[in-house]
Image (cartoon, each protein chain N blue to C red):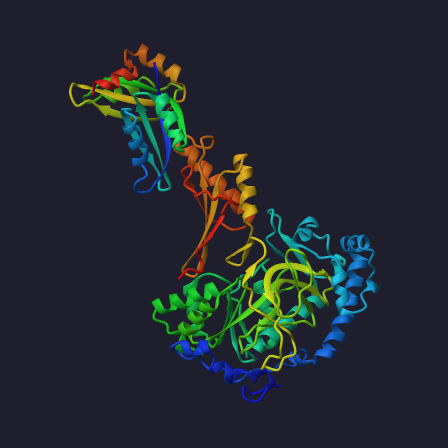
Length: 470
Length: 143
């Protein structure tokens, strides 16, 4: 079953999109989405709010019970607060439950938060943690089915359906992006090209020769592809390509305008995180005014990042998510550190799923480099390991050819300086290896003169982010 | 006789050599010998100066990373075979030359070679036994 753009519920705001101010600014009109897809799996997008709340409460009680029964950390935390699962009688009671933070996943590495025996776990993924050890996440078959369903619904919201050819340029592997998008696209019935990331010229060749209609990757990588295509004389606007599903890093409205005018596609922001499931926690609809959260599976709250107090609709704060249906690894009130707000009012697209604003910033110092989570403290621990004391250092982020570049500048000290070239080369290589080991990412390391890094009066300015500069 | 050589870390970028040179000039310290070793990423400025202790203090006060290294200066005739005659002495020995640089004198027929040996004392013995003139920093003044 599939609705027409001008008739179906999924396409209610396609016309209004055509007249959005952003579109008017760009010289080249986006290819119109001729058919907005309604997939059978999309039905929960339109469930009336009252029914949705009932479903959420029953699932919340189930997941809290499961966590309490099977995961020692949750039981001890709830015991500390004198709470039992049956204390959750309404959705508001969720605020009584303790938060879960990234450190909890790190401290229970690798399998401490699993609520299913390994025989029932069919997939493991991992993302970078804060100390060199990754954070491990697990899925039962039912969890994978849920993940696939939210990705199917995500693609359907973007107007994709069977017959579409989806080039999946997210990295395949431990990172959740690649396989998450892959199974979603297959579940949709689309044709998937599992090309993974990198090799830009081949990406462009495939995009042109295979008649690709949609691309999934990070927005910065797509921008790079679009720029490279122009160099190669390939006009993306003349190709069947019409949709981009971009996520795994924050991006701006200006970047969206640039992408859309260069390629003529409509660019959708998708949100997700491994701790919760991977991509497919929330996605924009064609109205491009906030991201609909698949709140039948992921319960959103906005809290004050300092006090943890729950904030009302419209207030900006930290997004806290609870998995409502996860079996292998239920996550209760996870502090995402992403700053956003829940939006009030109904979306013209007709979905009852609440929307959150696009992520503008984070409440901690986490950086996302080419989709990899990086904390300055990781770089610090690597430098400490190598040098014994912490040298002055600075992380400089730039973007070249659409890809994030990270440079770590380290001041040479009288202690680390050697009169021998070989010893300095070795110091450089040891630092580069240590940083790569802890981040899982090769970055450029530069030895600089003492006092080369500007001193600040207060907190040291460790990160210079020039990625979003034009 | 060993000489104290100062080594400075320098980024391999335009303008990075001038600051230490200016500082020493203002303090009236003479740079008697100088060599720059560089890679793509960085450089090491090595110099023998008229007053190394004061130079080191001034450079460190200005924030530089400075190392003091003991080097050996020898005087050889400035003609073909001058350097080879010195190197011959070390053939077959366990003494390693980590690096060296040479200064011909404008007047006269001598050149001064500056060596960084891994075993400077043993090297001096070999040099003196071979009849090579190991010189003090004063010899560098006669340029």
